[in-house]
Amino acid sequence: MNKLLAMEVFVQVVDAGGFTRAAENMQLPKATVSTLVQALERSLSVALLHRTTRQVTVTSDGAAYYERCLRILSDVREAEESLSRNRATPSGRLRVDVATGVANDIIIPALPGFFERYPDITLELGCGDRPVDLIEEGVDCAIRGGVLPDSSLIARRVGVLHFVTCASPGYLAKYGRPAHPDELARHRCVNYFSSKTGKIHNWDFSRGEEQIQVAAPSCLAVNDSTAYISAGLAGLGMMQMPSYAADAYLQSGALELLLEDWHSAPLPVNVVYPQNRHLSAKVRVFVEWVADLFMTHRGFQIKAPHQTALEKA
Image 1: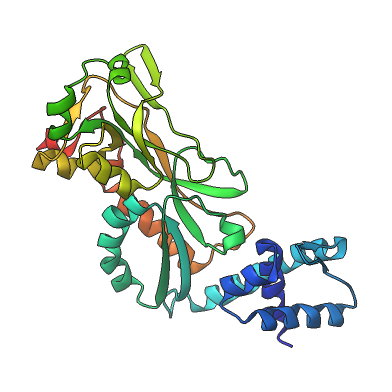
Image 2: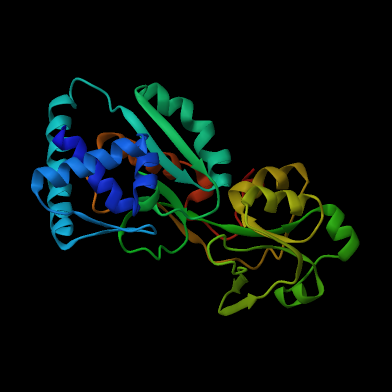
């Protein structure tokens, strides 16, 4: 039995809460995962896991052994990387999760430069607006916007997401242009709802000391950023969207800026990763690369409200 591999498999089973998900995360047959854990238990003469038809939970002995395994595996990786850092580039499979819009507009266009620098990394980029469980789904790191509810994650701030209110010329020709957020009650809006909770996000506006939250009326709510933009371009309603994504449409005239003297609260953008894992070389270089990428992108820097690329040109 490969003891280190068995330890890695055991840690994955505990993190993922089951053999099937652990096998998927490690790209191993489920039978191999089960066999390695059983062999580990036999060599230790203790039961590490409680198994039922519905779930797998860790025993008290297993919980103590899990913590030891984390430290041992972390030390092994650190020792390997300390020897190879000067003579090899980071390598291996890297699983990253990012929102669809950020992936399409920011990450993917810049990836040729990343792979030129780190050709031995194989990137698996999960794209979607559904927040994933990094531990359970075996994701190394994620790029997330907004306040982070999960305190078990380490977060590195890489930028700030700004929003603008806009609509298509076709919508404005039909329904008119609002002069105040209070007028949204007489308009149609495209709303965005959380994939996790189903809650529709309210729109917020501020101007000086005045702050307003609006439950925007809509005929359509979506949970995908690409679909959201498509709905606005089709004239289905007003939108409140990231300024970096709106800039090209504002420049082309496909969208028009609304309520320009009002601004919406910006959201922080973070790269997050589990705190109970050693930060491997491949994760470290990706986090640094993302931080540099966002730092130099004007759409994610602190700036005056509604200062879009159209206004800077």
